[in-house]
Length: 329
Image 1 (cartoon, rainbow, N blue to C red):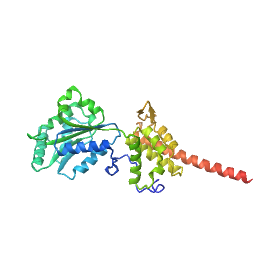
Image 2 (cartoon, rainbow, N blue to C red; image 1 turned 90 degrees about the horizontal axis):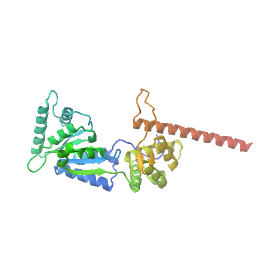
Image 3 (cartoon, rainbow, N blue to C red; image 1 turned 90 degrees about the vertical axis):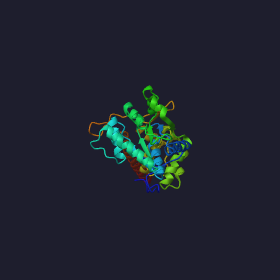
């Protein structure tokens, strides 16, 4: 609703991972290069970790887009609450293999035949496992066994595990020491610093059509956004989206720090001793006795904020009219 007001062609701060909005920092470049090298060189096991909202899924989508220029077959799973059998069925199905009525040994034979056949044709087979920190130990062990598909020179199945820092802790456990020894590359995404946060916001605004993002988000506003978000891209998007809605509601083209403060309070973002506290629910539900998701809470807060700012703007206009009438009399 604010796009025309700010001369934008599209919404700049959607939270869905869109590769066209990738903002490349030095760390992102290093991570993307490591993953790209690991897959194309058929190194086997590679791992990408990062805190919630740092852009892991977006980076993986960019990687897959780059790899699409090569002869790559891949299966991409983000549903990690699976049994070993369900996991095998999922990846086999995603590779286009028949799974109905297959036993575990038959599925493994199908996968093995597919991977070997692809290799003979010069293709690389890649398995991407997102949300891998949720995987049970027996599923991770099943993944390790899949890496036994190899020649004397290289691995035939490339595996990318993507997850939060808890994945590193899980892979460091004694039960998974055999899997850990097979990991050849580990890379990590970290939050953005202040300068990167500024570049991130301005770049997204420019891609959306803005010619003067620094006028919409001045330096002190960017500092407030970085303070509350701690450089987490997903939170930056949420704050900036709310800021544009709030500023539009007040019919101002400049987002001031006070708007960011208000949104941060509504979203329950707090900074204590340099550590970001996650938004806390207030017991509100969705009308069905279930707690609101983070996105639902954010949207409700932004709508309530927008309504209050509209009401405040109307109140100010009424007060001005009354004062004008009094001065005339």
